[in-house]
Image (tube, rainbow, N blue to C red; front, side, top):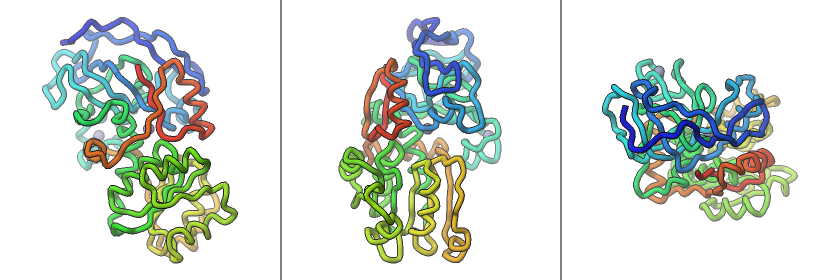
Length: 356
Ligand SMILES: [Zn+2]
Ligand SMILES: [Zn+2]
């Protein structure tokens, strides 16, 4: 075991004790360096993003339940302050500034891991679900899955790339038959995923129609490069308005970041033949999909959750080059419950990042 500073016995953490959106900010036991297994380390976090997945887990909404008590969070940036004895040397050393992400550990040996789909490894370990996550100043992480943060990138701007950023990047990368200049509709464009989706779509050379509601979200979408904005609350016929704003044939693709099921149904009507609907917002279920139309028009629905390690490197590199910049709302850990409530009610433009 090696460490570069004294490791406290407890850490400030937002602890979920029952399934609700209310976490208990308190002192929480911390594994000590001498107890770390090979491959494990302790991070001292500078900040963590807050993701909608955290809300779903804490609320027990997905019929899969984290153990209790638990600490959520999976977009952490900080420094490696202790490494377990007998760990292999790797790309990360003591003192390095690194990111820890949703898939905090996987086997790296199975077919899914070999293909870069670590998120689909049968032995994946999810941060804030199987193990305690990033809503704590200190946490245990796994060396193999840590990602070095580029020097150009401030920690608070890097954190949301580790889940929100890589998720939109990874699915946009799959638009292989959609040439630059095509219209991509980003639904939920003013949120954490959405405003990054606008920017990654622009980085890929697409034209973007942003859909959301309210002046704050409109301003954010336009400031990050959306070509057009449509307020869905001002529209009585969203499908017709999207076609009028893009092309009479319809948009080439839609990136759905909202968890409103209706958005998936609408997209089936406003993307053109052989268009693609990218599914990211975790609607519980979607009824009313026009399957006869989808088959007739050859529309592709593709889905993805997060991305493998290589995709994280690529998504961070675009942010470090200044092509993507997360709009961050910084809050202290003590305010996490009001952050969660703002997210739940759709009041937050951009991404909330907790700073320690
Ligand atoms: Zn996430
Ligand atoms: Zn695996």
